[in-house]
Structure formats: structure tokens, C-alpha cells
Length: 385
Image (cartoon, rainbow, N blue to C red; front, top):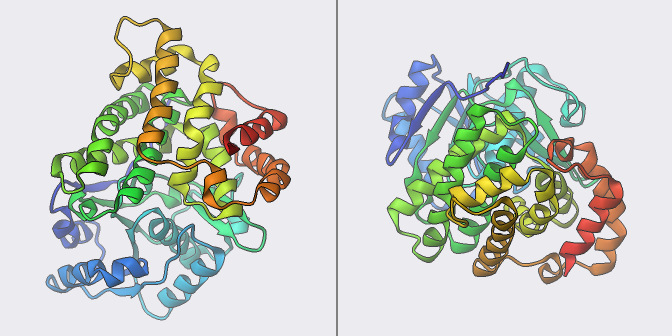
């Protein structure tokens, strides 16, 4: 038996943002509070959303100071702003960080508690306020997931929080919102989405349902990502990336991510590396290490993306996949940790703690080849370069 968790109302495609008022009305909601960041404020996207709602008689409050890799402090600041009015739902507008902030605020607004109490292994199934997710990047898949990640800035821990409560009620998936994304952000979020798809497919919790979504996402993302990076105004590439990221989000939300994500979160927490970039740093080498755990699965990834021929044997297909992941990392200028201004001594000193935090997240246990603490430590050493 497989339990599936999916947004109940979805608007997808160019111009989908214009359907936001209708979607809210369908869900019986009329007093939204929008959480976004300063980039969305300064570029006028927040204003566009507010105007879209006002034209249909819906008055929205807003908080425009969400931060990358949302912190406990940022969450509580947004919660305080929400509590200054009377709202019946929370809109997350932007990349994964504003959406993750909105998810946590929606739960805290109704139930109190704290992110530290709500982190895994706790599962928060009792819903908070309804969440509406409007992604403006093609990567995190947060619009389709039942997880949020909040950073404790006092301990540098990225706290994974999971449960039905974090699943958006409504997802507005409009690729036109991604047309102005810069190359670096396009590359990092795109590789994040590719990681979601691959890890969902090789996860020990994969199912026939998630397999179909993951394979479709891989095929779309692999071919569209280089085009979206080199030709940012290419509408077809942007549409494929947005669709692929959404499919990958639904896949990993129901099948789990694995070792790449387990190791990625501590890098982001300790060194403030963007989540998509830290995944991109890890993906080729973690795939190389993991292939022996499910060679038939990794071979299928290579074949669906057109990296290996349909007649290639598993060993050849797996090798081709690893080589291709290394090549696209080079093509998209993904830096190793050593090239990111990270202090080498601090990196190595924190490896034992990062390995412990990776294991504690639970994600490595879903990897096809399950590592222990010493193996994760060696992998952190291997990617330093």
C-alpha cells in the first residue's frame, strides 16, 4: 500500500498566476497573508500578486523580509506580522525559502510550538492554516512537498520538518515567473530539481507512482536545463524546467530524497551555501558512490535522459551517468567547496558534526547504498577538491 500526498488544487502553465483569486475562492479562502523576500518586493512581483487579488476584491497582508535558508528568527518575525491581522491562509511567494517560511508560519499560527520541537522525527500531520505556494524558481519543488527546512542560527542546524501540515493546499505553477532568473540561480535550482528526481527514483521508498513522475522530470530537466541557462528567455525550456521541477517535487515528497540531500543540508547550515548549489556540488560523487546499491535504477536514469542507449548494460550506463553529471557540473560552472571561499580547516574540522547531522536527518537511510558515519565523512573529504 502506498500513501500519496499531493496539492489538492493546482494551476499550471503560462499565466497561471492570474488564476490565484479563483483558486482561493474554490478553497473557500478570502484573507491571505503573503510571505516573500525583498527581491520579489523590489522587482514588483509582490505588487503584481497584491493587485491581482485586489481586482477580485481580496485584500492581502504581506511580509517581505523572508531570508535565504529561512532561520528561526525570520520565521518568528513573519509570524508576528501575520498575527497583527486576521488571515485565513498563508501564501509563499518566491523560491524555496519564502515557501518554506510560509509553511512553518502556517503551522505555528495555529498550533504554537517551535521548529526545534517540530523537526524530524516528529511528524506534523494536523494542519495549520492552508498554504498556497507560488514558486518563482524551477527547482525546490516546495510547492508540491510535505516538508520544510528551517535553520537554527544558534546551532547551525538545518531542521527538517515533515508531515501533511506542510503540504500546500494550492500550487500556482507559472513558468513565466522564471523568465528573468539569472544563469547561476537557474543552474543551481535546476540541478536541485534533477537531484530530487534521481533521488526519488533510487530511493528505497520509491513506488510505481513516484517512478513515473521522477523519470518524466529527469527527461525534461536534463534536456531543458542547459538551454534555460544559455538562452534564459526560451519559453519552452522554462516551461519544461517548471514542469519537471513540479514533477520532481511530487516524486520526492512521496518517495523521499536520499544521501545527497542528507549531506547537503549541513553544508548549507554551516557555510551558508545555497541549497541548490550544495546539492549540485554533491550529486556526481554521491551518485558514483551509490550506484552499486541499485545499478539497474541508476542505469534507467541514464537511459531516460538519453545519456546511455537503451541497449547499454548496467555497468556502462551507470558509468555514463556519472560522467555526464560531472560534465554538466563543469558546463554550468558548479564550484567545489574549495572554490567557494570556505576555510579548509573549518571544513575538515566540521566533517564529523556534518556527518552526524546528515545521518540524523534520516535521508541517508533511504539511499540505495546506506552509508555509516565514516563513509559520509570520507565523501565530504572527497568533494572538497
